[in-house]
Length: 113
Image (cartoon, rainbow, N blue to C red; front, top):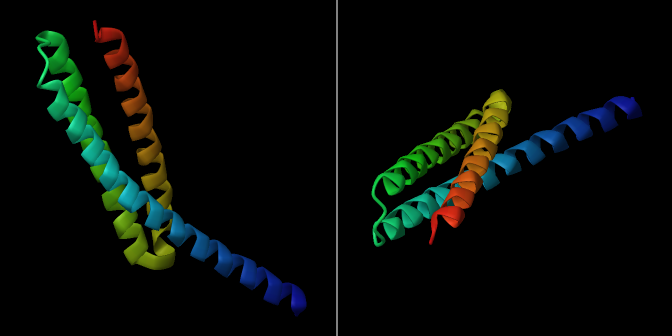
């Protein structure tokens, strides 16, 4: 009986922890959309030609990746227990967005002359 009670408490704690993860992914993804838009706007102050256009498109795609992550996170929070798989997807999409943003930063760092 005690073992069952402890296992149920661990399970409920995990569910609460998962919901907290979605609660962190959602505002952070929204912030990262703002970061992408800021870098995109600042990039238009400098001249760049074809290279700038490629970076602009990558930043726009990255903003969409973060938008998808925030939407998945929001739906996961609203779905409760059924939203666990959406939360995992939101986390993976968010991580992919961070990787893409880091690659864009490296490209920008080497392109600035």
